[in-house]
Image 1 (cartoon, rainbow, N blue to C red):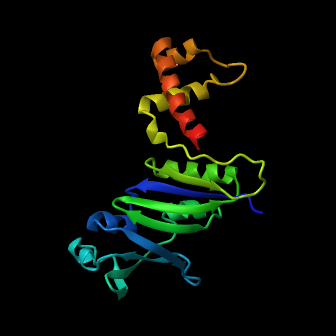
Image 2 (tube, rainbow, N blue to C red):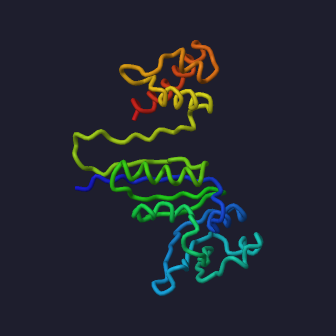
Image 3 (cartoon, one colour):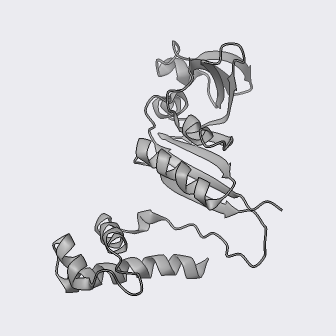
Length: 218
């Protein structure tokens, strides 16, 4: 059985994404995003997505970018074309041969779900995405049921940490504070951060308490 990982990420207001732009401008949710690449003219990509209310698109002055192609009930499907290779979120993922399996937008954020074959690929995809979209947040990680002895992935919301706590953890990790034997002691890490050892200890204790609470409760 496969041992892949299903990941869902959230990107705040991705620049140049008509799907996220439409939902932000209209205040509605979009879903059922689909994409096709012309096999003859590979430089062109056509995408479609659904909105709940066809009237809001005209009110948001997006009519020149989107074409309504289908409607039923209160839902309408809109189509737009774009150039391939402009480093949109979906293409960032697909560069690693990881097909995007779901895309939808709520408010100003785009949610992208994909399958990575292993943790190394997942880390590469997340790193590439975060480089282009600093607002990226990993919403959910699920490992395929493979070897029952393997540890399950646990989703940790970094938003639970303050900016300072995250900075302290990252600096301590990079300097080897958590290694055995340590490559840096508490005084050296505190000096690097420009804080006292007692303040360093307080930040580390608070951050570790939050992270361990999430991990052990999962």
